[in-house]
Structure formats: C-alpha cells, structure tokens
Image 1 (cartoon, rainbow, N blue to C red):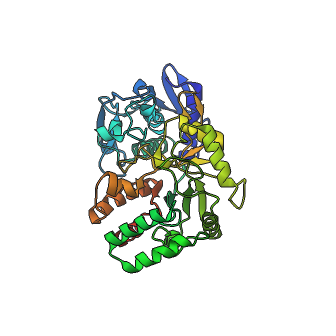
Image 2 (image 1 turned 60 degrees about the horizontal axis):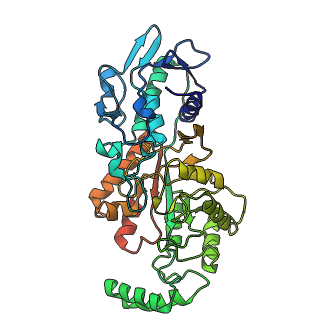
Length: 441
C-alpha cells in the first residue's frame, strides 16, 4: 500500500488537477478520498501492487467502457486499463462510492515511470526502449490514460459531491526547439569541412545560388547570416507570434563528444541570437549536453554557463536533455539539484505519444528516495525526427492527421500539446508547411 509520503504526493496531484483540497486516509487497507466538509467518501478498495513495483510490468490490460456504468467517455473509444479485474468498477454502498480499480495507483505508476526503474534493456544511447513499455505492448501509447482515468474520477467526485466546484483546465500548445545546430556553416572547424558541406548541399539541392551564399554564412563569424539554411529563428518566432505562442529555445552549454554542439554558448553569434530571442519575449532554456544525464556537476556547470549570457542571471530556467537521454529518477534529481524549474524530456525518441500517460505538467515523485522532487515535468508528446526518421513516416496528410489526433486528445482534456521541432529541420518547404499546419486544430 501507499505510505504517507506517497499519499502526500497524491493529494498534491489531485489538488493541482481539480483545484480543491481533498484528504486521503489509509484505513483497513483501503484509501478513503474525502473532503472535510462532506460526510461521504470515495473508497479505493482494490490496491494493485503491480503499480508499486519497479521494472518490467507483468500487468495485463483490458479495455473499460465508461458508458456501461453511466459515465462519459470523452474520447469515445473506451479506456485502456492496466491491471483491471473482473466486474464493475464503481459501486455505491451506504453513501460511499467504492472504486474497484486502483486509479490512484495507475497515476502513481505512469507519472513516476516505475516500469523504467532498474531496467537494463536500453537503446544505443542508454535510453529506455519504447518497445519495452506497457503502453506500447498493449497499444495505448497514443492515449493519455492518466488523463482519461482522472477525468472519470472527476465525474465521480461531481456525482458524489455535486456542491463542489472543480477546476476547468485550458488547453495550451507548448512549442520547443532544441538548438543542436544553429548554423549549417558558421561553426565548421575548418574551411575544408565547410567546403565539404557546401559541395554536398550543392549536389543534393542543385542550387548554385545557395552554394555561393553559403560562403557568406561561413565567413561572417559575428552573427548568423540570413542565407544560412539552419538560421530559421526569425521565421520560427514569426509563426509562434502569429499564433500567440511563446517559443522555447534550448541551448547546449557544454559537452565534448561528437554528438554535442559545434558552437559555444559564448560565441558572439550565439550571444546575439539569444539577444534577438529575448528581445522578442521568447524563452531561453538549457539543453544539457550528451554526457550530463547522470552527472549533477556537469548539469550545474552548464546551467551556470547559460545564466552568464542571459539578461537576468537569476531568471528561472527549464530545459530538455540532449538526445532525450534520461534515467528515472536519477536525471530528475540532478536537474533538481542544478536548479532547473522544469524538464521536458519525457517522450520517446522512437515513437510519438504519451510516455507518461498524460498531457499535463506535474510535479514528480521519487519512488526510490520516497520523496517529492522539486521540479516540474512537461511531457513531450511529439518530436519532428520521431515521425519522419525513427518511425519512417512521410510528412503527408496521413501523418498530419495522426499528429493532430494527439493534439485533439490534449485539447479535450485541457492539457498541453508539447512539441519539439529543431531549428535545423526547416530546410525543405514540406517541413515548414507541415509545421505550420500543427497550429491548426
């Protein structure tokens, strides 16, 4: 069963989701959810220890139809329910509502990534492999099952305590950009490297004028040149501003591997770029380098490097790990210790969808140290290269409808549709067109 620290985290989660003060007591092996001003309770009487177990999950999964018990199914296709048993889910007995499915356990398990803890089957970047996840194995990765079940619990609360007013969440689109390569040519280590890139681009694009312009991009070391194909920052901000959105740009501030950035945060062109972004009131964040995800000291040094070029050294900083490298809960602890206010890494590089089962920002819990982690998680739902590189899909109308369906699910629950599109991946017209269509419901 849950201990008091875990119960405290659950109370905070429900407060944030519903904006009311609820109490949770553990009595006789059951969890009682109640409000001090109301005599009845919602009782969770079927705890599932599978939701408190680390590593590969052996839980089965059934599809539950809310309509069969008089509830509204917002997505209209049933709800995937790991560990669901037989019989009805809800019963009213003696004024109390009994829930025979461990909704709170599900939320704890999904949001705090218990199935990832201690797993050693990782990909070549040391990342938890999406095919190992329960959501992929049972086909619900593209469904926010925590949001679905917490909406059912919301309906139960309103049905049990009709006098209570619950929070109505407003949908938001969160647009982020990892600045891995701000320039195609400027930061080449030598003229021969630049010339190799320029010749390759000429061969692929067959554009002689672009080839000539590339020399201008290489020689001007003080500022990103408008001719540079990766210098799409003004266009990105224009698109965001037309849609009343603040773009978030995450910069690499260290690292020495071949997979890290070719620029330094102190380069004149980067400092001027950051000035342009902040002058247009968009956000600057940290993109911790490839080797940092298990190093508190490296993250601390890199956030210090970033702060030294920001207009306000003490401003809040969030970010995302490079290559989405992440180990739960170790990486979160390191980010917390470095002082980041949020992290937006938790999505799968290889597949779009809801890795954490939610589209909502939330405060996580450390199941190993048994404590709340003082940072917020903004789950990543969609990344550009996930679609057309890892999943091998075309940027066509079929793919657009699939991504728009993820967005629709976020919208229905009032969550956040958080996307990542790299500034360097707007070199083709189809990429720009696909990106702009993402802003339309």
